[in-house]
Image (cartoon, rainbow, N blue to C red; front, side, top):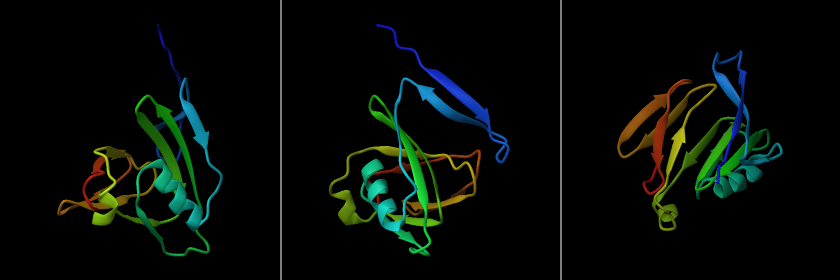
Length: 133
């Protein structure tokens, strides 16, 4: 059986990169604009249990789009500044999965296993689900 996918790309004037606008053949789900409580819930549903902290909960907004391809999930989100934390108690339910992060706009600071980094657009880093951060 043959499977084919059509990937549609758009040039993002802000970042200068090609942006995937749609992938035919993937199950995709776009979520509505969320407040801080909704963001906590959708992050845990999409990835794994994380503590989500926002600076201004009453003003926070975020939106996520996700797709599933076999055992791999792909997500793209835009959100106000957020701090994510994964503690020891969250790890008891963890499976060994990884999260690849590619920031498109702005920078992401990350710390895990006594390492700290700042990732800029055009760069990526790997997060381990079974380790705290």
